[in-house]
Image 1 (cartoon, rainbow, N blue to C red):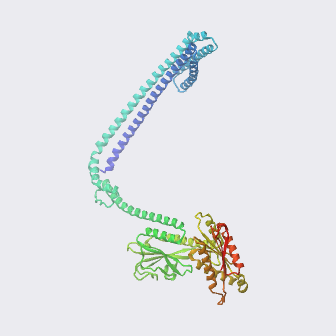
Image 2 (cartoon, helix red, strand yellow; image 1 turned 90 degrees about the vertical axis):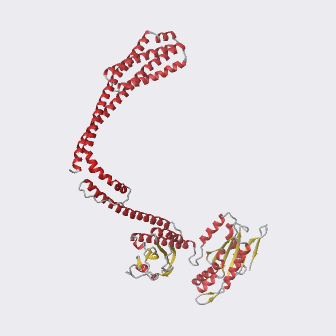
Image 3 (cartoon, one colour; image 1 turned 180 degrees about the horizontal axis):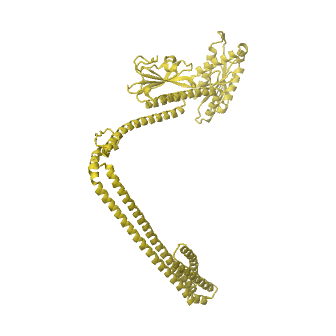
Length: 602
């Protein structure tokens, strides 16, 4: 007989006995609840009866002490006790609402009547004493009428307590008896269940279930610890134990597969998290060198063991240059023509040197090491390249999901395009479109920053004006004037170098701001600018035009004046240079304590 048939019969009998036991326990518990409710009601009624008796006695005592001693504290206590009597009325009303029997309800009504009558007698005595009738008040409180009402009240209270005690004790004993009866029945049912279970299933559990399970315990424990390397022995039995053995074998195989899938899913989640982190940091980059560092840090984590490079394309879209690398790739060039990469030509990832099934890129050597080129595009234009190189022979980015490659390439491409666009916009905002020098807005911002600077730095300002600039426009046209501006601006920028910053002030005027420079050094630099412009020939349309000359006005701060007037003072010096014949340098520096200006020229 199968184990199932035997256990089904035993299970059915056990279930019936268990249900009967449960019903008995529920009835026993309900009787116990009734028993507890009877005890609680007994305590409640007893305490409320005692409170009624004590309240009446305390009120009477305070009233009597007041008419005997005449002390106000007893009157105050009597008044407080009257408030307690109002609470007593509330307690009486609560007793009426408890659903007590008619006999107890009738006694409660007598208590209320006697208490009201007693209150009226005591209140009348206190009022008489207060109005001066002390003898009458004492006779009232110690007279037979008061004694009769008080005795009747106490008797009624005692009678109520006796009735309530008798009733609650009877209810308690009845509930206790029922609880014990049902508890005993439940115990008998459980005992029968245990006897049947042990008597019927002893041999089945021991011989056909327990011993095989003991042998399988070690296997199950190892599987429970997710040690799926354990071997499950073959069991030829055709009963439930044999089926369980087969199920454990299937569970082991499923566990092995689940571990593999979990490992893949974990790696996938880690890869997605790394890609997300890289995307966030790419969006926060301010410069392409920062972007290159982010790519070099995160890409090796996304594709472990895979070396690679990041290339960006020049403005003419003809050449790619390496901007970052990781794990030292060895088989690609640091700079190459865009046409040398088949990935850029096709606009999609290209794999080289894999089973020689496709043509390799020209920027790779002939070592035969597999390489993957992923083009970076933005707004339909190629702007760079990601190159991956297999270094470990067991990992390659070509095996990665295509979605990850496209996602990484798309985000890096967009980040590079955004940075390039940001740089172009910044240049348009801060630089002059004609000369490439910083514009007037940048000059104003620099002067404001210097004005806010509290370090008392020395500032030299040079105002430069191209002499007879209108003649070039009138004689050769405005294109010639633009070339003159570019020519002079380049000479000034090259001459100043790192010593200062060159701005286009407006029209044919340029401005140079230099910091931490003495007045003599500033004047010498201005003279060098003037002589460099005058000594450099200028040709327009294959014709030497010139010579070109500039007038320079120099001013300094803070010794010679505040930064806010720096431009005006330099402009005034420039005006003197132009009035005195042009092609000269004039400086306005304070050299005396009385503030007189010294003007130098050349």
